[in-house]
Image (cartoon, rainbow, N blue to C red; front, side, top):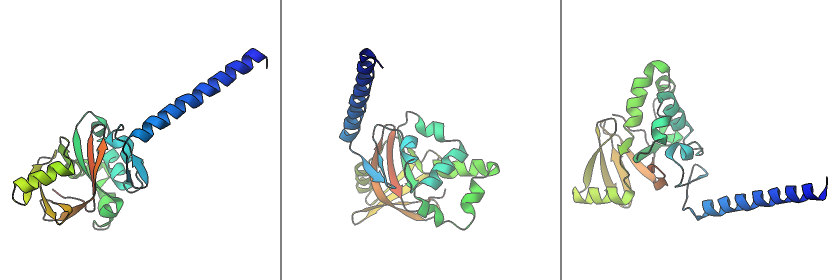
Length: 189
């Protein structure tokens, strides 16, 4: 390799390191939240982040089965109440396996969209709504039915149409197209 080629290769390697260092520095400036062992970046959309959480494999598989990936990659904004794998495990045995079958796509879509609010609602926004509602706030989901939010001590809870309650375990996981609040129970319309 001649001297000119060596200089060119060295220059490309140096630029490569400089570029990757810049990206790393930019990424490090973002305020991330750890979910499922992975950092959630506010510059990424809901799907780009969710696929990295080892606690949300069931939710990601269900979103794919329902054909909602493209929607949740869209502009939004959305507020997603994201049940963990442990939340899905609380359902009766065989429920998830049954729901992800193609013939049950409509029911799966109904359940998943029941976990989504149109708009971006931080925990602070929801707390304010609960306070204004004298301890409760009803919010309409994308599915069409409502969820009731309430608080107990420093914790935020959600009650579904069936009377089940979910606790927000990680709030305010900001995304480029909304926010995720991790919950410990699957909500049912």
